[in-house]
Length: 262
Ligand SMILES: [Zn+2]
Image 1 (tube, protein in one colour):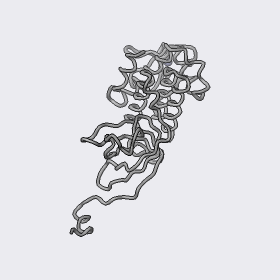
Image 2 (image 1 turned 45 degrees about the horizontal axis):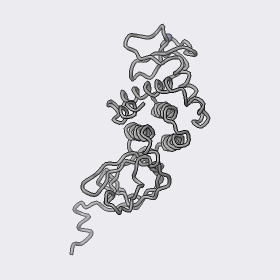
Image 3 (image 1 turned 120 degrees about the vertical axis):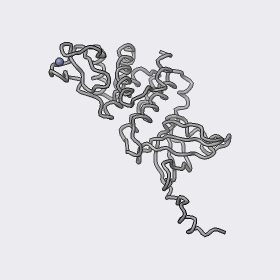
Image 4 (image 1 turned 180 degrees about the vertical axis):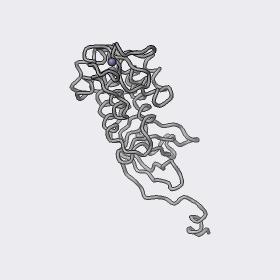
């Protein structure tokens, strides 16, 4: 029989206390034969990755709780010497599994999860993004639309990440952008007026820019009347998803699936 203190002395990880948190599942991947690697946004600790042992077995105790955007209560162990936590147990608080039957809703949720998973730094509390994810996923269900919720989500993610410039005035000359189109260099934070624009800049139409301002000024459920303005809503999402891709230095894998279906 091996003495416990000797085992610890030669480097076996010591088990840390069990932690409990409210969380949203961002993404999960098969790991080995029976496990899952899960990325989740913990309300208290921020984005964390962990291993759910046996989660792919038919009668796993995790059930449907590890589906993307599942709102759960999670219990996990930190492990001293490893980056990944060990997921002990989950309790499903709210599921968005029903939305997976709708192609566009399913692709939109996947894109939202991928953006949060890629943009958020590990282990930094992100209460704003936590509430944003739940708020937008619930609105997709209630309104049965995706264009407005996605534009809302994209704009707010860009703002919370600190990448949204002034939408009111030209970043170079200070001229008002009210009622006119604006331009920006890809990845740049500020918008330019028509006199200051340079070659190769992307444009945001006057209608889309006005819509973006309105979206940022109200709660999503109070904006439903804008939900039928598909073309400018898609332009807003595209403009700011391009900015996110520039900032994270890669393409979002879920984006082509959604754009193919619209
Ligand atoms: Zn200007």
